[in-house]
Length: 282
View 1 (spheres, rainbow, N blue to C red):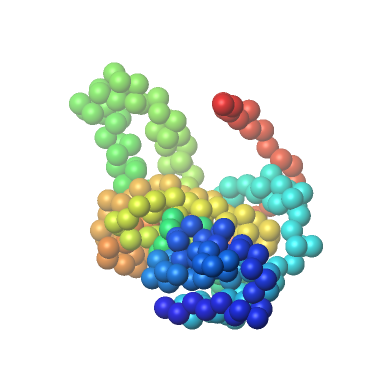
View 2: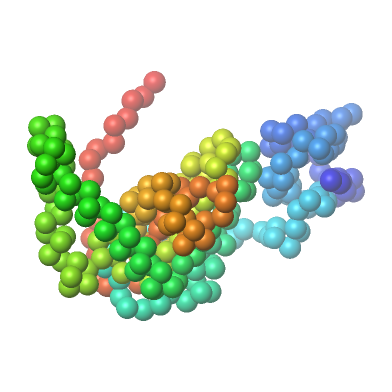
């Protein structure tokens, strides 16, 4: 890896040295120098922070480095995005264009990852029949478990332990009546599904996926789309090899976030009620 400082462009502001936590850039005889390029984790910060474009880094794509338009950054606009985003479980019967999903994932790749690992991957499912079959598999399994808690020894244990009062179990009779009419309580008849995954082994893999998922759902909302994170599918994928296979999860990878995506069937024009945050100041 070759990193070069263009001396006649460099203002010696030392921002590259101050911003490099990997120890690549160091102060040498009054000037910043890339002393240990082998330590670089390709975070691009030195290139991004340099006010004079005085750094050449052959490990980075210069075409991806461009000036930001700070006029487009609005705190109030972002606040409205977060306040207005809802978990959408009713979608219009309309496909999401591939180029729109590509825009969303292209932004998600800029989400921070621990040590700039950049090992987050995405599986996009737009096959409506595959989405339907996936939802049916999970629902059928949940229904079988529910029926076991209604009778026999397992039912007695469920009643004795209070498990029968679990809200997911209590609502099952209602769900059983709705499913024959075509309602999908798992993946909500969504036209698209995004699985966010990383290597099974590694530090902060779940955190990396969660950060990407947050950017996906917020950016999708700003584009007029609705999303919902489906924890049931995330759990099912952890235990079901056949489900991982049918959804194309690569060997050695683990899905940490599953997101349904589509155009909302109706708007949510108001904000919602939330508990006050539990904050401790030190």
